[in-house]
Image 1: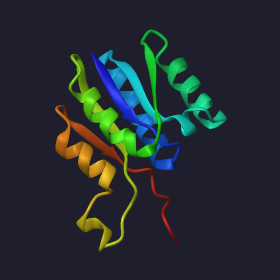
Image 2: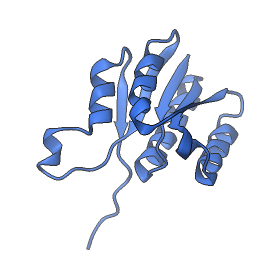
Image 3: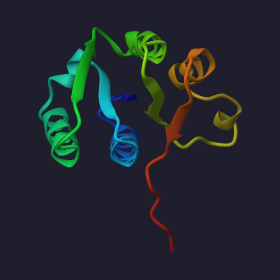
Image 4: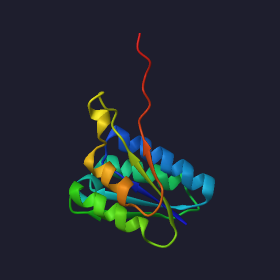
Length: 129
């Protein structure tokens, strides 16, 4: 069984990575990280990947690099149809009242077209005041 993660190198993606790693550890699943090539070649990505691999020592962490952010939705949807993929995890930005009417087009498309469940993760918010 595998869990797929859409990773863009944003704080939202890092929160999603933490959630995906937790789910993998909980269910004994492998992790498939799908990321645009430009993001996947950054030192931050390498550090996040190393952290995931260290946490999931006995599980496989696979990387799939796509050409652009626009290809990420297609890659995640395709991944959802592969045998053994049980969940997709994506980061989600917090939205204004108007922005709440629509999710981001990438997230919305994956949620609507994926075969398996999709979890949208928001980064933690610090209390104000």
